Length: 280
Image: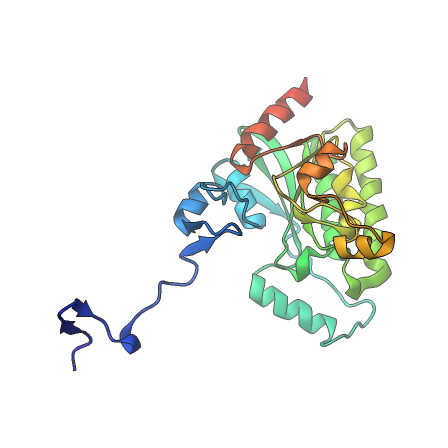
């Protein structure tokens, strides 16, 4: 039997034979704009019609920032243990293993060293796709080791934050990463090695309360959610409605917590210019 039939309206394909477009071929922004994934990739994952910055991970940021996508990954083998023998709906090791298989990542942060427009740079980048970009012991350790690499080689350090906050499965071990990373950043400051913090959507919880806000320059992408507690928690705590745009990058900048907001399409050149300025 033919897979199509001819009618007076032209050739029609029976419903059972229709094929959908491949998954991931198109992307729909929150405002309803439709963009082809190829065009989105070529535009640094920013929708050309409404400038919406799509959430991306370390793979994409490394492609955008490092010259010719060439870099040396640091401490790629580090993976979380289970110091508290934590169990919720499933044991913590099982959750880690399942997330590693699904995401292709070993944990919620990757670090690497390479060059951007010829300038050496160490980048630590969080991945929201790994348990909500939560900050656990491995995240803190990899940031600390990345800072050590910057110190040893006198190379500037860029932190790209994207996180829901501390990882509850590691409790106090997770919270201690706030102090650990902050202390290591103090050494970077003493050595007068530049540290730039890029806050992306979303940056919340203990990450905001520590290394994300400690940069020599704190910058963000447009429209990013930045805060400590969520809007609902704050609203219920203070018993008042929150201002319009509360916890957006633009609101945070207007209140003095960010130095500037940069479009991702200009990010590499902006960072390069900033680093060259800091060299002098």
